[in-house]
Every structure is written in C-alpha cells, then in structure tokens.
Image 1 (cartoon, helix red, strand yellow):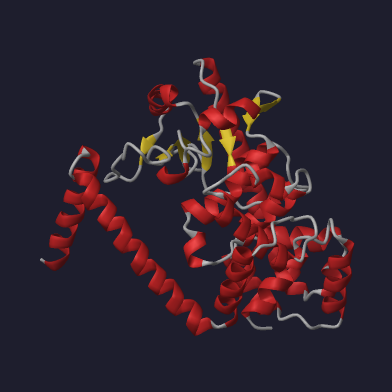
Image 2: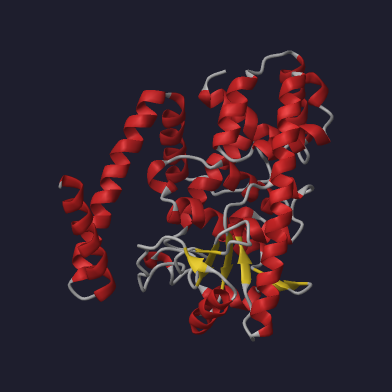
Amino acid sequence: MNYKETLFFIGKCLTISHEEENFLSVAKQIKQQEVDWDNVVKVSTAQFVFPALYCNLKRRNLLSYLPEDLVSYMEHITHLNRERNLEIIKQAKEINSLLKENGITPIFLKGVAFLLQDFYHDIAERMVGDIDFLVSKKDILPTISILKNKGYFEFLSEAILLLDHRHYPRLKNNDGIAAVEVHTEMTKVGYRKEFNFSIIEKSIYQQGLLNFLSYSDQLALTLISIQINDLGQYYKTISLRNSYDVFMLSTKVNSLKAISNFNKLFIPLNNFLAITHKVLSSKKIIFKRNQKAHKYFISFDKIISNAKYRESHAKREKLKINFRTKCTIIIRSFYRKDYREMLYKMIINKIQFFL
C-alpha cells in the first residue's frame, strides 16, 4: 500500500460505524490480508486518528483479523488517550466553573468541545492538544486575570500578543494536563466579517452547565481551522482528525448547508468538504460539485500520489507564506506598535543567529 492507498483505507475505516458499504469494503480488504499495517500505523499516528481507527475497528468486530501485537499496541495507546481526555474534561469543567463564578461564560471549541459533549462513542477516539474556548472581547482581560490568579502562566516567555491575533498566548498550569487558549476570534483577520462572536452568539447552545457553538457553527469552525487558520487551502493537504470531526458533524447537520451563507470562506471550506468526501468515501459529507472543487481535488490527488512532488510543493508554499507574512509584518509595523515589537524581535533573533 502506498501513501494514497493507506490514506484512503484509513479514511474508510473512520466511517465504518455509520456507513455499511464502507464497512463491507474494509472488512473484505482486512480479511484478504491486503493491508500494510505498518503504513497504516505510521499514517494514522501522524494524522492523529490512531485511537479513532482502533475504536471503529473494535466496534465492528474486526480486531480478530489484525496481528495480536498490533491490537495490544492499539489498546495501549487508546487507553493512554482515554486517561488523558478524562483529565482534560476535568480541567475544562474546573475552568468553566471558575469563570462562571466570576460572571464569564466560556464557549468551548474544537476538540475539547467534542469531549465535553460526549460527541464520540468513546472519548478515547479524539486526540486533543489544548483546551480552546471563546469569550467576548470585553471578557478577555478579566478571563486572563482570573486564570493567572489560579496559577496559569504564559509558558512561552517571548510570546508577543498581537492585537488582531485569534487568541491570547497559550497558558499553562502545573496542575493541569493541557495548555489553554482563550479566544476572542476564531479565524484570521480577512475572514472575520463572516464568522465572529456576534454571528455565532445567536445560536450558542447550552448542555448542562457548559456552552457550545451550534453543530453547524462547529462544522464551519472545523473547516476554518484547517483551511484558513492552518493554511490547508494553500498546502492542499488533508487532516484526517479534522475530516473525522467533519464526518461526525455531518451525521447531525447538512455539511453544505452549514457553509452556504459564507462568501469569501465558501470556496476553501467547500474544497475541504470535497477532499474529505473522497478520502472517507462518505455519502454523508455533502459539498457543492463545481469546477473549483474539482480542480482542488486534482491538485490534492497529485500531491498525495507523489512523495517528491508533495515535499517540493510543501517547501514552495511555505516560502510563499513566509514571504507574505513578513511583508504583512513590515507594512503593519508602520502604524502598529505590536507589529513593530514583533519586527524588532525578528531582527534581533536574526542578528543573534549570525553572531
């Protein structure tokens, strides 16, 4: 199995608890011993879906066809992730209680939101990095003050807080397992008119004592996170972790309808729906079939089919993005103090590198 075949196999595996046709295809491939499990482990681990892969295979009683040592390893990693997620849930609930006691309502986002909503069959399925939550702009400074008084600190000592950044620099507490990102925005500057606090505020829903975006807005944010914030639209790569989130959300809402009101955001978000639909082979993921989505998939397919091209494309796009970023910093430094500070720090670091 090459990289593309492995990617598509894992993608199908992530849907087998919901899509019978994919289950039959995956089961046949496994039973006929057509799977390169070394590649599957490598790619699923890099894509942060290894526990999700295990949980889906277990639910459909396919583990008995896998090598015993692989099953033991999968069980071990999934157990570790389950224990970590239980700690993250506990930490997030403590933050929620702390802020609500002070009149602030956090809206949990992304991975931690899925855990808190019991979104998956097993909380071990989702690998989570940080605890992300959103507050209104008027609440950001009080929120940071409350967290710091509770022992949270900025662990990246050289972090510069740009006025237009999506979130405050990451905070950590020595008693907590996860870092915390406090957001006032959910996307990059150029897209905020279409997706911001005032827009999502109308459809926030409460589950117990916790608050979340609507399912449609969660789906939109999942797409925005990979395509806009992580620059996936330029790199034309797939994040199976995001794709799995999109798939699960698509079992609850119409994926195309969730992005239909966007203008500038529509094309990049629809593009990711298109490649996720293909890689996961899922009928539940609906996208607009147009020329732009078709061209995007052709480029994506070329990237995942050729390792040398994949590497050169990534390097080329990284150079372009770095150039655009530096130009933006220089231009904004003429009228923004925070950008001047960042530019100064970049210059000092460059000088120190050559000394």
